Each structure stands twice: as C-alpha cells, then as structure tokens.
Length: 73
Image (cartoon, rainbow, N blue to C red; front, side, top):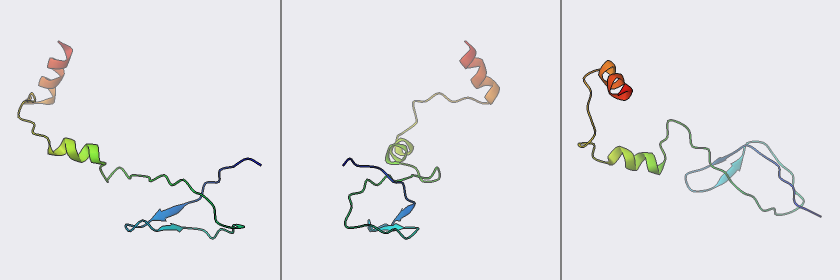
C-alpha cells in the first residue's frame, strides 16, 4: 500500500506546536510534512539581511525620470 498526501489547514505556534484548524480522525499516529507560509508582511531571513546591508555604494537618482534615463542608456 502506497502513501497518499492530504492537505490540511493548520497553525504552527511560536513554540512549534502544530494545531489543526479542523478536527481530523486518524487510525493511529501519522507522519506529516509541514510547509510554513510566510506572509508578505513578514520578511524572510534573506530579506532581513539585505535590509541590514550598507547601501553607500548604490547609485542615487534625483527622480524616477532620472532613473529611467539611466536604464535606457
């Protein structure tokens, strides 16, 4: 007998506890794979690191038009 996947909505608490949003009956313990959905308003680690990087060597533009002029050349 092969394995099958079933998607269920759940919340992973800060302490790692997984709480299913709907009741579910199982015949016994079951393995699970948990995928964490990172909301757009919660930056991931790579974004946090990029925010912290110094930006002194990046070009500055006085206006959006000046930026587009640079991009077109």
